[in-house]
Image (cartoon, rainbow over all chains, first blue to last red; front, top):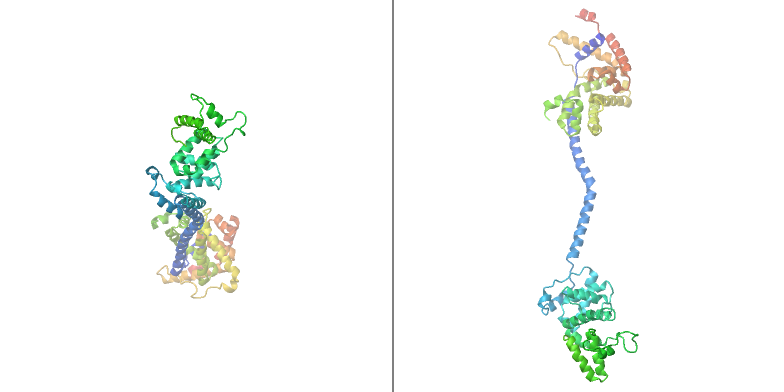
Length: 281
Length: 195
């Protein structure tokens, strides 16, 4: 080690060249620049990593907002607005407070507009609140494009009536007629009474049709054991608990009148009025 | 970080701090190693201009590869491994005899006077020139081992790690180098006769 120490000592006594200051400043500047570049890269990496997910979320959010906006603030068709304006003056005070239901799709708005245009041509409809028909048509569209011939609109109409709305008379009557033979007669009678109260003029025009009850069994076609309205009317004792429905009874009375049996018709009419004082068909 | 605090930290800790964005840590680290590293390169290349380029390249590599730096060994080992590879690259780029010339007068930095005694100064200058010539005469492996020992302060094992040889090989290279240098240097008797 002495040998090494000697050489080491001699080496350390040599001059000790060092890098110039320009070299120092260049290297330190490079080190500083590298740090700043790294910070920029970090920011860039952050955006590269999150830009796509953030964009997707933002786009979905905008779509969701637009859909919700369309659903909550669907524009009302011009025809509907016009009818609403015209009918507002004739609405009853109770119905005036009922809120207009919003149409949920464009198809519904189109159907509503068509129905409103048809309704404007019908005098009885002028008295009805405009939005009642709209509600019935909207619900009927899902089952059948022709609400008049479908039974479901009437059911919906009943529901609508209970909710404070009023369906179109044709739709209402079509549903009631479809119930004849299947539904409890009391319910049918109640619906007819409600229909008449709501649309007295319409009921007067279609009274014959309403009272015909073509699908009721007759003497010739009725199977054994089924109800015959004329026999029922004549053979029912006055103190019986079984009574005919208002409309069937009225039809039977009319039939007696047409047959020339005015005496029995008057007697049945008197009984009828005792049982059904209001309304009288 | 305060400079006083940085001075107490190890090289590895300073490098890690620089990796974390602490510029003052790098300044301290650079101040520690700039001189020895510069001489390590200069004594091998014997060309100040080329040495400056290689020196700058070495630190540029340290700066660029800071993200990949892992404190698995001493920072000095890491630094001198880079330096050694850079010097070897220079050897490969050009033939040493052709491109890495023996420094002429004025090429090497002027030695600083370490004493006021003109005789002693002259003697040191003569000794330095003799030793420089002796170093240049050493084989590359022996010169490398000698410079790593003198400038970096690495142990034999660490020098072996830098150069990729065993501790015994390093020891052997050092012994050969010292013997050759000793034959070139004047003996104490010769020095006394000169005086």
